[in-house]
Structures are given as C-alpha cells and as structure tokens.
Length: 215
Image (tube, rainbow, N blue to C red; front, top):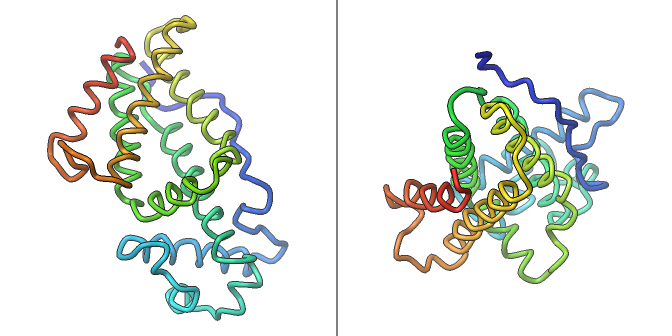
C-alpha cells in the first residue's frame, strides 16, 4: 500500500483580513511571519493576555509601529495566529500516512490533534475565552473545520477501501465533538478527574472517542 498522503482536498480559506499578509514585497511578508512565529514562541511561556505588543516586537526584532502596519490590533492578531494554527493542522492531516486500519488512522489524528493543542495551549485558551463572550467567534473558522473533517474522513475511507455510511459519519462527528469538548473543558476549567498532564488522559479519551465512532 502507498503510505504517502495523496488526498485531494482544497486548502481552506482563512477569514477575510486574518491571513498572514502577503504583499508584493517578500521582505514585508517575511516580517509578518516573524511576528507570527515570535508570538507562537512567547505563548509557550505566557498567556495571550500577558503578551504585550512591545514584547512581541522585541522578540520579532521589529518595532511596535511595524506591527500595527501589518495588523490592526492585538485582538485581530489573535485571529491571524489561529488561522496559522489551523493551516498547520490541515497540513499535518494531509501528511498522515495512509496505512493500517481506520481506527489506527483515527487514533493517530487524535494524538496529533492533542499534541497541537498542548503545544499551543495558551493560544487555544485565549480563543476559548474569546468565544465565551462571542457566540459567533468560531463561525469564521468553519472552512478550516470542514476541511479537517473531510481530510480525516477521506483518510479513513482510503484505508478501509469503501465510503462510510451516513451513520458512520455521524458517529465520527459525535466522537470528534466529545474529544474536543473534553479537552476544551480541561483547558478552561480543569474539572478532573483526569487532567491534561496525566499520562493516561489521552489514552482514555482516545478509547472513548474510538468507541463512540464505532471503530
């Protein structure tokens, strides 16, 4: 079996105005990307609320004025960061080797999804906090979500050699919703009994998701 990813999926479109700017000058594009990478690094150490534009500019080796030339505000910059996060998430999904059984593919995707959130925990926390006060916050990311679901489904159908039924797709959707909701609740509230840092958190949550998906 060909283990390379070969899924035919169109790239998702970022919300208007929240893409990393792609001006005509290569230097300007790289400057915007420097801010994004600097922010993702700083957010490993502190929350988005704690992150100042001045500190971000120092980390990117650029001025505060240059930041505001490329991004309207720190709030808008959060959307730029999330768009970058989701684009990367689509890239690794497309690169998942198409080998093994559907349950193995699904388990691998869930594991990478979990690692991505943990590596960008403060970014994800900021997004969840923002969405709590803005019910429409996630709607602008629907194209990313739809692509992620499509890539996952195509990978599992490719390894099973058939199309999934509507009921199977529904069960996958429910499993994904439960998986994401438990992680999000832990990031915001940490209710227990298992915590994100516990060694058996991911295995237990994965087992539940796989069972719900009927794999």
